[in-house]
Length: 295
Image (tube, rainbow, N blue to C red; front, side, top):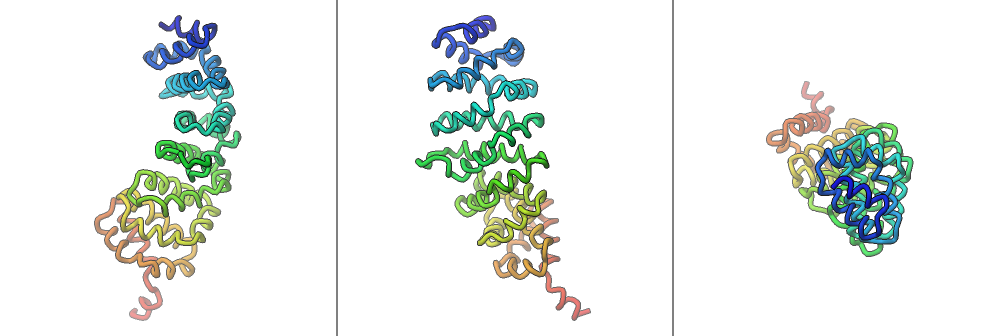
């Protein structure tokens, strides 16, 4: 079977190449590794550059199979130039292809050696637009594509050199828009809050953008009340970071949005980390003047 796949990918007819690409995905990890060593990624990437939807789809599935769980193959595929090809394919705005392409970005972005190359390619603004539903005119971007886009950006955010590019892409406002638009307990909001907290903790610009955005503090307070346990944890951490950045400026704003009941509840029944962060924020929200007067 390995010989059949290798020969047909390199020298077969259109139908034979599609069949070989399909068969590759059914092979075990050891067989896929051997085929990768024989250079089958080259004809697969070539298939992505055709105008043949069936060939493109088969090649994408095969490349995902080669890359999944194999760091060497992730690096090899990127070095062979798959990133600009994937970005070009996104221009087709085909919904099913878009899901596969973003899944490919998710897989290759999980490898540290690929992160700077992905950032340098211009992929970040594209992923942010997809996440915000701004990439196509039909608004047909699937939930899975959005989940994979935010996960890809989260992978990239673990590289400190890339944080400024992520922040300058408008990600903060996109994530806040998701927070306003979806149920606070949804998986997409969960993932968005994880990414937002990480970016704010790493970038003063992101913190300033978040704290200055209209309705942001209210949205975090609502998330503490209505979100899933992990989402509440991220929301309280973000509010804590905002308040720590300038207590005099934000203490009153947070209190006016009615944060106290949710924080008090979270300090009792939240996750371990959420309880600790809620207690720290409650201390910052106390009226120190009145407290000192009682002493």
